Length: 294
Length: 229
Image (cartoon, rainbow over all chains, first blue to last red; front, side):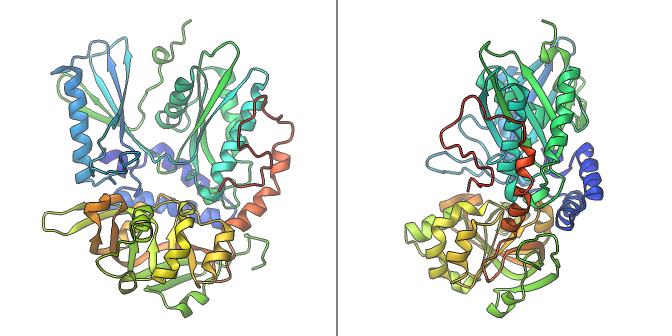
């Protein structure tokens, strides 16, 4: 969690640096340069890069032969303990409150918090633990579109979301934009979030048609004329990632999820010999996870 | 600069002492880059509700602390010696706090509001201008480490027990904390509004050939020049 909160993944850092170089609007360019300086300040001082350290959550992936001492409940208890410890020690902002009473226990724990999501791979005895830190008040939306809306409908919804939340920089752009297309409503939202948060910059969908749409939407987002903070500029979308799920025959639900420029993710692979290896690419989307074979 | 273009800002660097003096605010122009020294305090919905809606006085009157109100929650933790560590500071979106601002200005005399994303322009004209207040926006917005570096010490924290770490009122001594951008000046002009106007000119072309959705939604506006604030 410390790695995620403090160190920007290299793929994202390099992309923002490139945007800063090419941005022509002085105000937007200044903001992008300051974002770069902030990444450096966070690393140098070992402090969280953003004061909103988000809602801690975990993505757990296990090889089929992975065994956990104490079982799954032990893993979940350990993750809850780690959340409270990281909140105290890094420190993270205790963001989690009761939704009605607003009671804050100052440890980021609560009902259904933190979220833990699971996935599996057919081979392997390892466990991959990914943490993502992000805010989440602005920059996401869901819409039930229909086959008659087609690709133009998706583009329009994409533009609506980017313009709506891009103004004043509410989405904290430049961002990685994730789209979920299809599935049930909860699946649509989930894969959009995973697409934004768990695929590194430069990663393309294996389906060439979807990959082409990803590239097209990135270009469309950067042609709005909007930069960071909603200032005039052309630096809005760092990358677009699309994931699909099979949908109801009558519908084409779409969800859009932006992952801000404090794009914090870190993965640890734990193997039975007790070794822990860190990386910034979660490798979450695999042929098995996408169930590409029909 | 002209009233219509956000492209020819001077972006002067200005250093301000907090609490701020009214005459210091006169020099601020839209797009100027501001760095702060002195004392600022955090206050957001928790503080506003408690002070304005529940009429509970803080242990120290706001006027004696500072006239600079930061819409933020620090990533802070108590240390064993009773002090606090504030490592990263990021603002929260200010537009949500408009309903408290008239009474807030009247009762506290705040002159400088720092936050994320500004307020609707009508609030500047109606609330900020009569109270001679200026709005500074944080940059980015996730420059938590950069602003954290500007925190010299935590002078005190009020209502920690009642409101929790995120909503408590943190009184911070800051040194060269910044950069902040002047979003609204003493005349109530808004940098975001200028930016919106410039961006709106491109929208009709952008949406060309993209049909209205088959199913529309309640509350939907079809005029993309509108904001949702």
